Length: 292
Image (tube, rainbow, N blue to C red; front, top):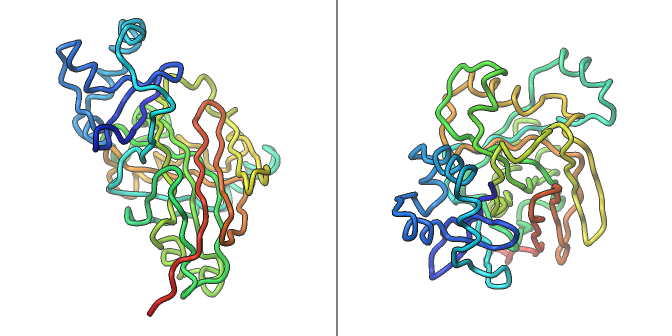
């Protein structure tokens, strides 16, 4: 199932995308006498996603075809939600060849960092370059894991059962700040607009082989980097289990899984994240206004 958050009738609300037909959860509630939360974050918080997925898989897919929908040309995409309680990022997680994985996996734990929700922007919103603090900003495409249920100290075998689904994201870094000292990583990752969050969540059951998903970073209309999840040093299930042993993971928490490569951003650029099966996530880039 593809769940999408869109701006419609003055609010951000969730819908199901089936073959580019966007059926609002509000419409489904009216016709099915259900009470699904119409905001995706609430759907996750209240533990209702599994029931909605079951409805969709059994009878909903067929019923949606007869329901009123919002046409694609009228869609204004929004971020899936605006205030995840945790946004984890993972650094240096891809290798060029799968054979390199085992050696690097054995040598170290994942490089992790956190980002504030104030860094979050939705599709087509501008990434702002904070010229007063940095002169070298980079961006990269990443697959985001969306946690679907509360989990603590889980095993790798249990981990994907705690994942609601996946989204496309763009992670942005003030690379020159980070280069000054490794301890500056959090600041380098935390500026406003430094986290692009897609509007679409694809549930786990829709992806037959997660390891074969390709993540692509596009820069000004050209492919800059591409890699496949099979080349991740730390696979998604491992990342979820690992971080659950650090802190309790909650519904709606986001784990960014690393990038095949970054590009340098300049005023006027376009950065885009593409993963097959997902709507591309695109952001223009602009310089921020100077400080007074």
